[in-house]
Length: 511
Image (cartoon, rainbow, N blue to C red):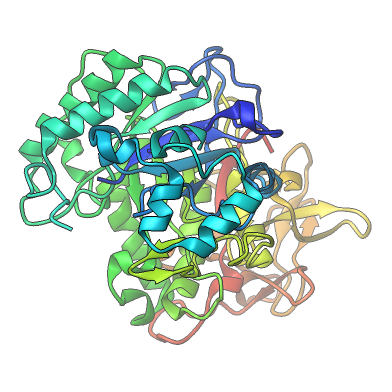
């Protein structure tokens, strides 16, 4: 978990989510579509402010839980520069990790940053911290934190539940001084052979009550079993706490959460099957309006060389957009002070490069920016559809200069009406999307002759019978213009890439 002292920064944080790795927290760094009023609450599946307006969390993960116990990157850039960079990338909050022993081990907490880094042989990193953040080296670890295994399940050798609750209470109390701390995650990635549902309910309820009693303003965020991939037990058994409108559940989903499956089959089948499993294990909470679901960790290798990640990414983008989940990307950091015994280890899943100065992959950031948009606002009235293209993170628009149907920012997406008759009608007009034929752009016509069906297991191919009698799918050409082509990769072929033809129907009343 971590706290940020906003008084030290030129671009103050507003929302901080605190996460415990042995626990995690949220800090807002930018606009959140509306100016949130007071503490945050839940309203069925939504996170809302005191006025009942939806607040969508679009976060980055920023670790401080590793051995040095200091927010990563302070040896590379000044803290306010990092904060401004987070905001410039379009994110509005930070999910900040913290080690439990920081608040339960007095001698450790009183150690200075200088002493900690010298003891780990991190003299070069310490020099960088002194140069970029001169206020930090002489602070104790706990004060620096305010600025900014056998340990997998309750009762494990290094996981004392009583110590854990005590740590949660201390951090929740510390967070009362900082109104930008809006949530606390009780525990990151529960796992291991001792994992069981009964103990999950026992200790999660105990931890939630402890946090809320100490700091009733924060959201209380609960993780699931099996590295936070499984909350399915909540379908049959509710969690009972004495307070209301503060519980949020979180889930993690990486390509490696499914082993090597992403490289081993037809991508339409893989996306459909794995998405269905994620929905059964966690997504049902939001879809059934039971609780907000926070996709608190997902990410890909920013170098673009991981085949599994490359196939997984458009699938998770499609699901996160269509479900309109709150999220936190793993991760911000381009490097670590010390990880797995390696000094200055580079993090290829980081949004920033190893010097924390530039975005590692601008194309990836563009795709992620589509998730930052709150597609649905409260109240849920005047809903329409937009066509989201997960391969690019863009949406279908119908704008100047040519009035052609093309891909552009989802903030300028064309609104469509799509109902049981399966016609796509441009909202506010009498024009319908009509398929002409292969390798030809669809057109807007006054008659509704094309019925658009989802035809693949991924649920992302929009297919219709064209005017020439052929069956085609929506596609995109090399210039970002909408065309139609023969549907590809619907089944069988394991190497075929269907993603140029993937379009998610996203419900919206804000775009």
